[in-house]
Length: 231
Image (cartoon, rainbow, N blue to C red; front, side, top):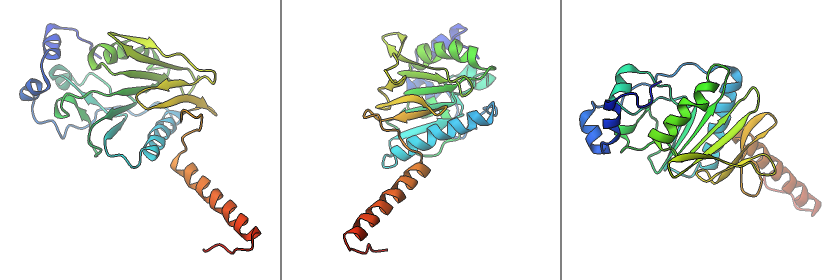
């Protein structure tokens, strides 16, 4: 990983999105260049984060979720392929459509609004240091969280001025995300989303099960009143 190591990269930072696009080739078909995730725990956690937010925002078309997807953002990085993308990232105010990777100069200069890294013994040090610096200084990503599926370590940072400031846990041990308008917190050994009311955001399967249970209860109440529910 490289973080502003030379004058060329500093020069690129000062370019507008249009100037950068003029310098770069058409990169709309750039493939992601990410390694496999570390364990089945990491795969399951990533799927949970994606699935729950997709379900909650199912009526929206103005966001993109990247899951273990490369973010391309500079000429040097494009040539060297020396940066591994976040495990989970969210971009708001953009078109919801499939992408092979996130190419900043093809997306109007947009960087992620929120990033979540899933720590592992092999990546934890980089996630806590180099990536945190990159997301703070280069991406200017408003919120950065990390979570370890192995140890359940959870931390979050919000960009205040030029620096990340740690987000304080509430009484339940959750962290509030202004970007998501949700809490993130550990429940039964996994990272979940919680609404401001404290209600957990369900997976699509949990939501379907809850709907079936609610329909069954309603049918029982109707039968108790002597009304046979329509099938």
